Image (tube, rainbow, N blue to C red; front, side, top):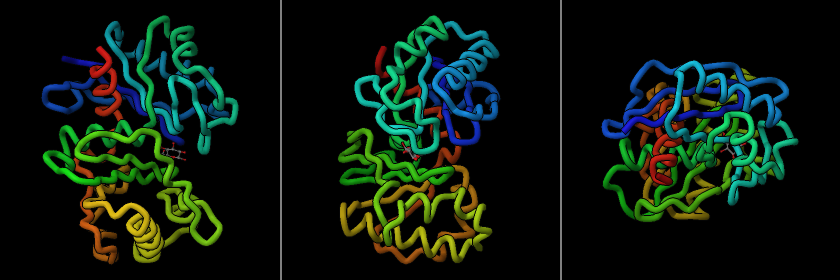
Length: 245
Ligand code: BGC
């Protein structure tokens, strides 16, 4: 079973056909820059460009950095505010001429980690955190997703956590891994005291450099790097589309 998975991020939109038996990309991915401004129409056109690039005719799944409730986009932290209230199913149907399964990007990454990565056969309360332009969260209880958690937006000292400890903040403020990991640790401890998870899985592009910052984390909850790294969002979006079929 091959499904086209697309991951819409704050800086890039990445897509590839995904082999859902093996849980890996079937061909090399295509990455296009996120249009600026990242309006619904501009993003839908970029998604269409990716589908065209692969001459795609089959099902498509797409992760969006927003809470998506019954097809309606509810938040827009790192995309244009015009997204709020957009009927994403109608938009993609209009621009691509086909239905697209759309879900929150971190939820997509989480689904992929549960099926093929660090969350396999793990039960209890699991939290997948994607570290990138923002901080995305996916909450699971016994492998079942509780969708649309926006826990990158909890306040730490009056600031949204993602404005304090995201990957983009690390780069923007030229923080050393040690300093930045200290901030991430504060965030994880806050989540710990609110949710008491059994496991944190840390994903996003930075997860491939986990050896640079894991040694500085002191949160008590078991914490592991994501295994699908930056591809989890693409694989999980494809999985979500498959689940709909
Ligand atoms: C958004 C989330 C998203 C996360 C990671 C946050 O700013 O509100 O919906 O999952 O960024 O992209």
